[in-house]
Image (cartoon, rainbow, N blue to C red; front, side, top):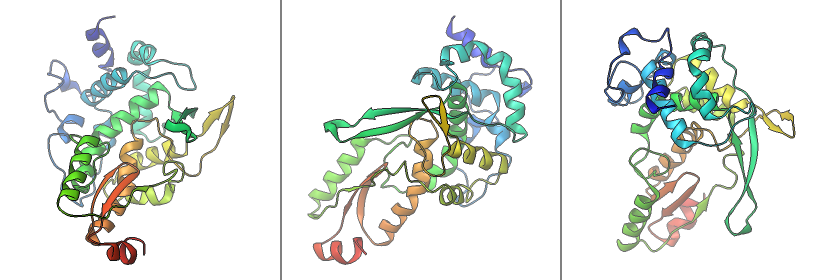
Length: 287
């Protein structure tokens, strides 16, 4: 099947009628329009689900999910199979999303060895459909939250990288900051408190359908050996939405470090604060 066929299949019937014939990279009303402007800081965004399911946003999400490839989830459906069947099943899924009835499937547990034999990292593989929906959510939520994130946060953000964090850390060292703390939030993804995270998300998102869906993704069970175990905390790595949610939660840490006057670089769950002196390190960073 040609790439153009895949895009045509993603043009689900019943979606916005004015979208056909547009350049998919052109800003339009919907998901792509959110990426073209900065949302007012502190303002809650309502009616967001309509933007999530808008045709251009779903087409863009499908392309990204297919580019990421990845293995199938608990239903065994590959991203290639999803692409072929999406034209038929999307109207039902879209309706469920708009009505707040969509229920994510459990994730498939995979354990990946950490470098140096330091244990394993637990990864939860969502189904291809859930990866598509999470990617669509991420595309409209990222522009809402990202402008308010700290300038010292470098992980999983558009236009930012680990290399930039290393360069900034070297600048701090060259400027005379000789004290540095290597902070690694151990098992951060495994211990995320769902209520606290959802409280942070609801600061900017007012659409209750989106809030319920995000919580359902957090609470979706994990399948191991054919059995599904419920999840009351944590957000397993593996889904497109997890990195954004981690930054939403860790933004409070960034703001606290800034409030205390620390120069720092953070990439996901690892941070390098550069306190001005050892005295500051002992009396401020660790209290």
